[in-house]
Image (cartoon, rainbow, N blue to C red; front, top):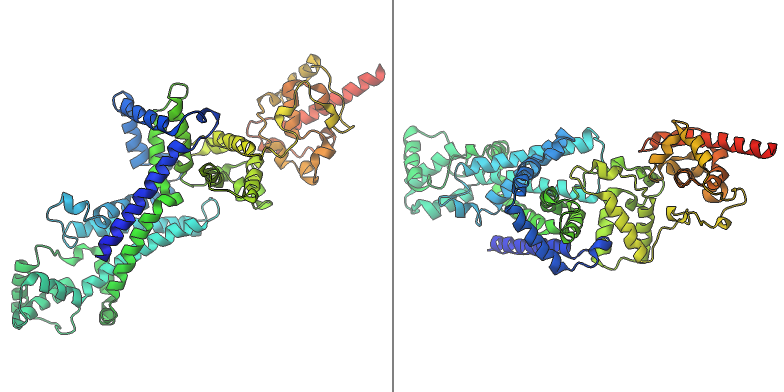
Amino acid sequence: MLYTITLYTSLAIFVVGLIYRISNWFRYKIGPDAKGISAPTRVLAAASGIASTFLSTRFGVLLKVFVADVLLQTWLLKKDFLRWLAHICIYGGFMLLLLMHGLDKLITSVIFDDYYSTLNPFMFLRDFFGLVVIAGLGIAIYRRFVSKAPRPKTTGVDYYAIIILAVIMISGVFLEGTKILSHSRYQEMVEEYAGLDEEETEELRALGAYWVQKFGVVSPDVKGPFDENTLQQGKELHEMSCAECHSRPQWAFVGYGVSRVVSPVASPLERANVHTLLWYLHFLACFLGLAYLPFSKFFHIFSTPVYLLVNAVMEEGRSDPANIATRQAIELDACTHCGDCTKRCSVAVAFNEIPNPNILPSEKLTAFRALLSGRGVSKQKLKIIQEGSYICTDCHRCTDVCPIGINLEDLWLNLKRHLAELGYPKPEVWARETISADFDLTTLKDKTLSLTPVDKTFIGDLTGSAQANTFSVCFGCQNCTNVCPVVGNYENPKEILGLLPHEIMHCLALKHKGLALGSRMLWDCVTCYICQEHCPQGVRVTDVLYQLKNLALKHLKEKKAA
């Protein structure tokens, strides 16, 4: 009764959580294009899109992605074989265990009329799937704690995943082992199925001898060795009463191995009723984990496959804007938390000095989801999110390395837009948008020269150099500024240096001679080439600054000569 109540309660919580998370995909509005599209409109658009996909040639694409990316997870195999193997073992083994064993009353017993958990091949498959999960856990632990594979810092949720899986698997293995040994479990089986009276002591002894000899039961009364006649009589009784629902326990090779190891202490374990305690621990861990799943970051077990399928059949510019808005919301849940984006993040190093988790791409998604949910994020929390978000340089690296193809850069731009709408805009005075032809130079220090009209000769001098000409591919990610030791030397570098490296590149793109030549950054640059080494676009930042210094000196000489 307790098992049934817990099972259905856990399933109910799981379904409610699943519905809630899926409803967010249609409620969350990310970006200006999604503002005017209602949730019902998006639901209808999704239903229409699904129907049209199944009735079109795109169904073949959907099927291919389902097999290659959802079932076989080739996207992960391309990046890291060990991580793929661990993921396949844990995910595949656990899902098969859940469907075949955890939900056996709802699934397996419905499919197979003759199903019993103590029959083969179900015994063998249960242990095999369990061993696969244990192997996956072993690989995951090895990668995390032994090989020290590059990855973000281990979090509490990561420990939770390992611990809950370990509790489920270890308790399950020991539960099976102690049940094989348990004499009380054997007696329950005899009373329910054998149909023997207490007066039939000879038959009971023969059956007990057979189970002790062949099934590994540890009996306080029946001890070996046994003669052949007794074992033969026990075998006949077994085949009449028990064989229909009990296969030899050796097929449960993991549990049987454990039973052989703990058999010397079987009697104390029996008296302590350990197998009952293990049973409670095992099924409670399973069902509590199931109930918590939709509310944890491990919801990506469901959302990532959905995103892979949706993303495979959608086309920018052709798909319904309502479906594009829904896909962006799914992206918030589709993240697998692999940490690749954080490892490649241009500003992740800032986390060492500013312990704000919102600097890291893998953590900002959680903050964005909290903002969209409207759960009353405090002002202090908003400031922390604001700081982490605007340190981002929009360098596109996180999007480039995301194994499942989430457009993270687009999400960060929309996060900044959302923060601005809440009254938390970019804290810097020098946003790129402020640099224009009518820029108010009174905001600059007196060290900065006045703005001059576009000087084609000046631009020609720059573009004549193969190194300096590289400024044209700069997209203002601010990497050069973030790594510059000169900028880092000042508490308020703008007050001292005028324009910072990335702003100088932007001035060149806008062809503003005065701003470009007027920054003290040109003269404070120590030509360490760190900015150049970290530019994701290959802009020769140091060479550009060096060329600008030459042009500034030439300009001053010409002015003096005149």
